[in-house]
Image 1 (cartoon, rainbow, N blue to C red):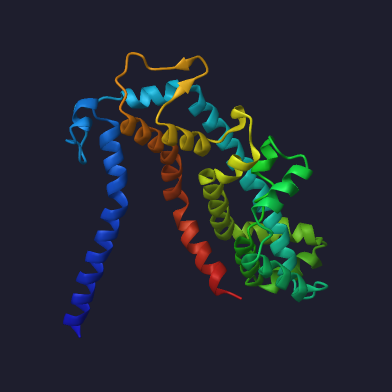
Image 2 (cartoon, rainbow, N blue to C red):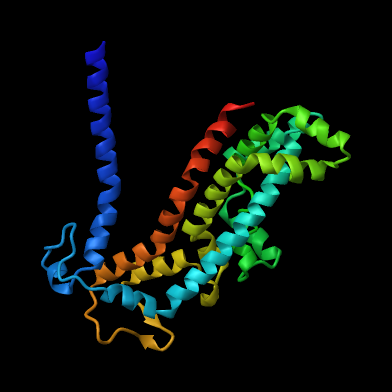
Length: 287
């Protein structure tokens, strides 16, 4: 039995090591190419470590005003969108966690129904247009303010909280909103961090909404700007092409832009990973 356990550990470790290598290799390769000179890249000499190390591509990326504008817009969308989504999702999940609510089962069925069937892209676009949200920052916030799966996870978490806590709040004279803000939400930091991470990553990585709803280049998020850079293979500032003193390699430029847009979310994730794991487990098991 002991020998079988050891074999399982070895095989499991080898598989996990392969997954780690498969996940890390693209990032290491992009880093190596983005920090390398044009000569070794053109000759195919760069594998993992950069050759003829230089930071020209990153200097070139940051000189383009679109990147900084995209960063600013994306941070605004992520901050505002995550806050709005958490507020709306918390209110909805708290109401749905009350089984005595009128038409409780009907609302649950209607909400779950949207997980499998939706109006589609064109009706959604027409709704956003009719509300006057086109070419505004709210077009990046309101259409995706609530995700059904996140709502159900938070509802399940709220249902797992002891009823005695809410009863004690009512004895102290708290209203339903008072119970939500003073008792329920302070005890729900793990699931709030989990759902907030889901929303933040979705907004950070999303470009389809911006592609459909935004026409003003000054409102473009970073991912849409990155998409345009990767597809066109060139970068220009408001005054025209930049980086005359640099020798530009198309692949190195693309990889540098990708790393610049990906690095922030990679740096933030380790600090909230513990909440992510704990909140996902609690929200999916209880209830």
